[in-house]
Amino acid sequence: MITIDRDSQTPFYQQIYDQIVESVETGAYRMYDRLPSIRKFATDLGVSRNTVEQAYTLLAQEGYADARPGSGYFINPVETSRRATRVFSADYDAAMAELLRVQAVLEAEPDYAYDFAYDRMDADAFPYSRWARIARDVLLDPCRFEVCRYSSRQGLRELREQISVYLVKEQDIVAQPEQIVILPTTRRSFSSILGLFDRRNTIVYVDNPGYPEAYNAARGMGYDVLPHTIYPNFRWSNLAVPPEHAGKTKIVYTTPANQYPTNALMTLEERQALLRWAQENDAYIIEDEYCHEFRYGSPHLPSLHALDGTGRVITMGTFSKSLAPSFCLTYTVLPPALMLRWLQRPEGLMHTQVPWHTQYTLAEFMRQDLWYAHLRRLQTAYRRKHDALVSAIERHLGDRVEYLQQETGLHVLVRTTDGRPEAELIELAAQAGVRVYPTSQDWIAGKPDGWNYVLVGYSAIPLDKIEPGIQALAQAWFS
Image 1 (cartoon, helix red, strand yellow):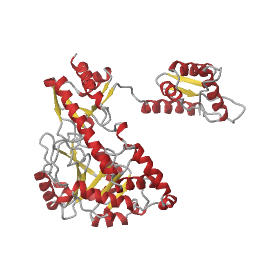
Image 2 (cartoon, rainbow, N blue to C red):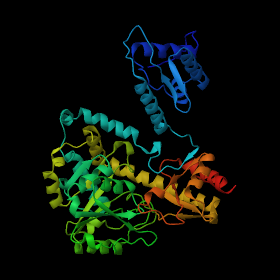
Image 3 (cartoon, one colour):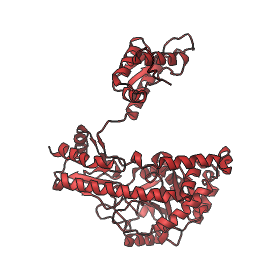
Image 4 (cartoon, helix red, strand yellow):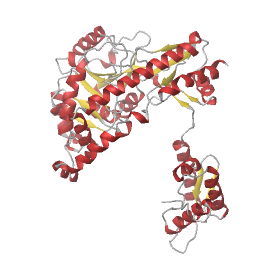
């Protein structure tokens, strides 16, 4: 670990240089390792960027590091007296150089003044102190020895029990803990569900536009996937079954509480009609309750699962939007017949992939009712952000744009009325230090002419940055 001795007479840059050289010679830094970015290192050490840059320049001059434009500084393979070195072929070195270049691009964090992200949370929204206290208590609990073995293949029972209570309170879903499976990601849960069916005799319908991960997962598993266009009419119950697929099992994947990416809410009439269609066509419905927690004036409607009495609905949910994306924690509620099928599959014999400590901490967080208090605070904060964003769009962009916002979700879709393409809007925004996001990839069968919407999220950006961010966007697009 590099540290700064502020009482030493040795200049700071020299201290950094000496410690990195020692780390190289002892093997703490290995050949081809990437050094921290100058900005991050300066922040961590509490010194100026010039100080770190001076140390890095000296490392490069002495042959310990190599500066690569756009990628940063990397440790050179050097001979030392303290560790053995291998001689790599030219092809190996070339491949390593390309790998480092590609990874540097993938891991680069663009520096935007206003980032309207939709897949992250505001860093101030996580309940750090409460979570830390419970996480500590969990390791002192008599059940802590459970950490020394794999937990239930469906996930920790204590967590499944709390999710069962939560589903009744928030979504009108009555489900036993025995019906619930804990898995790490939405795509993993979706793939697990598809694994219950024979891909040769099953077709999968997905919303168009819709969540691309669902389409990619189904296609990757060899299923026939049919896009069902729901924009601009937002109808789900009129799915057409091609003659060549007659007699096959049908699976419909949809997000009724908040259709992605349009934020449309499936009406009660459409929910009932879709359930009738499922019964008439030997179909199962996978309802992904994505962002169901966040509504701003839209009515609370019973979930498809709550309306279903025939075991045709499979419900998926995630804590990524309401707690922390990094936990990668989702749940799936299976009808009893499908749960029995899941337990008989090889996957049903494997342990869950979500760490025991994360599961147990969340179970306690929910049991102590801290979860519900956290959720209410988050709903209030997101409502304020939603209202601030819509108000700023109307005030600073006005009738020069059209926007889709259905009083649900964590983003708004915006396009200019002059028909400028998505790529141009994103590039102009980036030049002004504003990051907005594409939506063209959400169209499975190709986006229609004139779509051109960009996604403007508000879950991660601080409240006080929303209006100046939209002002900057207006200046970028219409200066």
